[in-house]
Length: 536
Image (cartoon, rainbow, N blue to C red; front, side, top):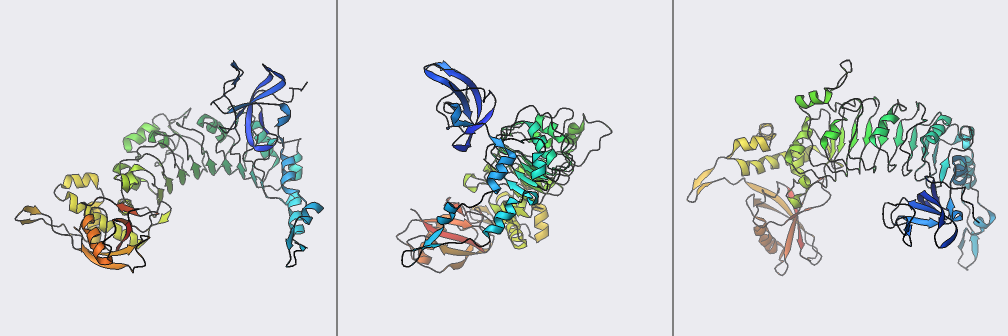
């Protein structure tokens, strides 16, 4: 009879044949219709199991999905190993005679010639000297405990960086024990370890400056408790924890974290910008990563909102300008869909780097803003979507933007001010005069905005090699008319064309699919490049 005492409900385990197949014990005992003892496991990765905790009509536990649970024989599971055992597995490896015999190449006469790795002995010797090890990665090795008292301290006293991604650590007391034994440790990665909800037994971790807790199941209440043990924390990574709210206990805004420079909240479920405003009093925060959340709009708090945020703070507590040191704000892959959100970024005092890609408002294919409009509307941003904005790009973008707005909203100045807050400033800066409407037989008409120098480049697979052409075209030329001109310029009468605007700094060209829109309407400016392709 197999013994069940080696496993208990709640214990973290992995498959004995695959340390990356990790789960939590949910049941230990008999299974009706089968002999012996079984361990019911809910796997971290959905799809690793065969059922939801019930078998043959009998429920033993409730798993989160139909295929995330399994019943496993105890000998097919591992409770894990100690941190020191993992270090030895990863770094104290020596080539055996059999390994060396397998390292060969075949000569011209089909004879084996042994291969010698130059410097192999020195590398092995260096890695085997644990006392000199300063950085260690022991991810997915089944680490479940710190091991014996002080054994880590004795083995790797100079360790500064430790990556424990994907192991079986779950108890915060074990984390505290590891950190206490490593006085020089500054960076710790616990990603993909499912941590306990109860944060207890954690000592003061004075040296930790970087803590990575991606996909650990942590919530903000736990983060608040952790803050008390992390007086020197500078980077905190909390990706993929299904966070939807930032719940503070004693204050309307997040307190503490005096040294925190980078906070990563990517790939969570935050939908309300008011939750993010709770971070606005983090005085040292320079980088805030919010990619892949569910934000629909953002705004910079006005005086009334600031007073509301600070209303319940103790009067003796110092308050700061919201996001006073924020330099980088990443907002890619959200649901932002209003121009006011884009314009609000100008109010952040020091913001120079932002990501806005994969939002409806920045997708020209869905009626969003092309890059040149974003550049023009964002006065202080120097890096947009990971691409630096050059002085030349800024100047051209702002001029194109001004002319586009003037062509559409000339007769409604109040609407211009509301929808385009920078227009007056940009007109003055670039010396662009208002264009007066002229009156013709058909009534009032706007003046043409001049000729645009446009480079046309053939990229279609059946077009052959054709040199790019630079043409001067009226800004009022429609996309449909330009297609007809391209047929003539490049002698492409038998092809159905499609045109793309290629913008500096944009990763992908923009399809020009509205044949009635003018070049100015679709954002074509002076010295723009248009790619001439063919329908597939």
